[in-house]
Length: 271
Image (cartoon, rainbow, N blue to C red):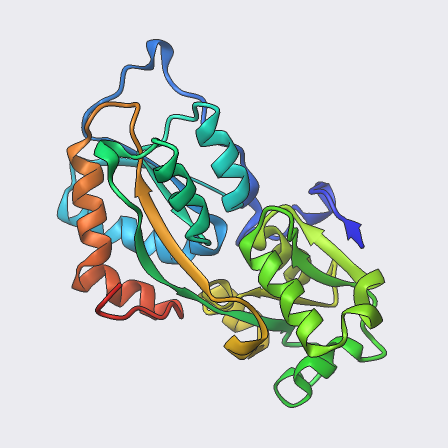
């Protein structure tokens, strides 16, 4: 397996280049405007989160929202080390559940599930690989030299990708071709930019307008990996923030659900 780091060679990929940024540095003294909302978000949510934020800010124009995208596992560690976020949106419920159980939630609240994620095998539209027909066999195509996935050590979509490769029985055949992004958006960046020939990425990224225009994908059936239960947690430590609760309610409301479904998340009424 190979771990690729970001560099100038990928700077042409504008759609998701900025997604691997670390969490923000903040103003002196830690004083915050009560109308400011700071979100840590799993990178698979970038496009859906953009829609959620736009719709929310249209409703509450005085609110300032800042969002940082990255891997859920890295955010979990950052929050435990004092990163000043109001809400944590994770691609795996295990991280907000652990934070809540360890006392990091506002008012002792438990995390709320916002949807189920899906994994796809994605290729550029110019590729000769018929990914919809070949399915997992696409990864064995003679033209494939590099396969992009997120790092399974801390990225939930990377874990799901590796589980899928193992359960499909092809992991041993292709493991030397794997190149790992720090998070699922960087993995998508690798294959979208041509640094990898094919990739296992989030459906929520594949359904963005840029990725739909430039590629094709096959959706991996759920049985090949453990469920990608995704949820968010209101965090303590910055004082009660009314906007955080309003945003949480918005995400769980009809408009928020509609936006999440637009990007391929499975949302049911009992979540």
